[in-house]
Amino acid sequence: MTYRLYGVADFANLAVHLTLEETAAPYEAIFLDSEAGDLKAADHLARHPLGMVPVLETPDGTMIETAAILLWLADRHGGLAPAPDHPDRAAFLSAFFFTTSNIHIAALDLLHPYRPAGDGPTEAVATGAQTRLITRLAVLEQIAAQNPTWWPSNQPSILTIYLAMLTRWTRAFPAYRDLAVDLSDFPALQTRAAAYETRPTAQRVADLHGLTGRFLTEPEG
Ligand SMILES: N[C@@H](CCC(=O)N[C@@H](CS)C(=O)NCC(=O)O)C(=O)O
Image (cartoon, rainbow, N blue to C red):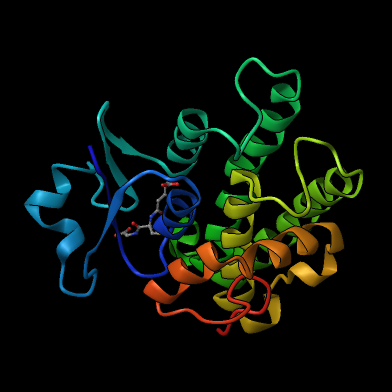
């Protein structure tokens, strides 16, 4: 079966799309139009109960949640994360789930502070998110700087792909421009994203999302 990825250009499905391109697996990327209401249409709500993306249709059923999909693809196709029985798996999983639980959530608060703020002050929420992001990226930076075998600096990894997509957002789309968080403050993380983004595979996917050049490390806001 050909995988079918549902997404919107430059939404979270970008990480899944990049990962699919690194596997040799056949897939189809279907772009929905969020402005036209495609995400909340009945056919998409049947795929995702909240009408969100990414959604990946697989031979084992329909999957949601970026991190779950990335891990599932890595396990199924190999090469993009330590295998489940590898001794490096424990350290890798810790960093990967640290990213989804801490970086992804804080990035959303930096981009969309009005969601958690409700009637409260959005700038205070965004400022708090920026502080959390910087502290948490520093944790990952310290790990990456030790060059663990499970996080190569010059090979694609679902951790690099996921993290680089999130930091693309934190630099390009913060709710307040002066709160942008830039990967260049985290050199070991930046090295990984910079090595990855120039791969022909990454550039092919970027092009389909309307992105060009150093789309991860030097995104245009
Ligand atoms: N936890 C989910 C979050 C997915 C998510 O936030 N998707 C956004 C795009 S980046 C979305 O579909 N937004 C459309 C909407 O909320 O209507 C995941 O990691 O897949």
